[in-house]
Amino acid sequence: MSSPSASPAGSRGLFSLEGRRALVTGASRGIGLAIVQTLVREQMNVTMVARSRDLLEELAAEIETPSLVQALDLREP
Image 1 (cartoon, rainbow, N blue to C red):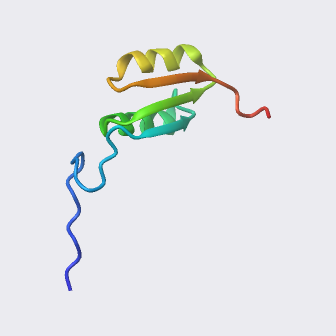
Image 2 (image 1 turned 45 degrees about the vertical axis):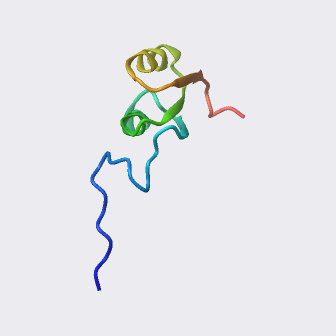
Image 3 (image 1 turned 60 degrees about the vertical axis):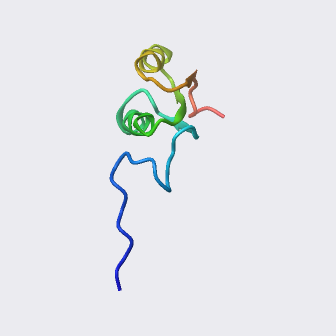
């Protein structure tokens, strides 16, 4: 019994993320930033949320896919 082979990273096959949307919290640094960078490589449109508007705007200027930034502190309801 053989299992289906995995698609190479970045391929645009059956599981393409191109043009899809994602919301990432904590997007200005750490794990959130790494997630944004990965999703952008897959050509996703990303909405980035973090407390630091300056860092978010710098990040948005660097990426090539459409994106939105929202400075929020999600610790407060």
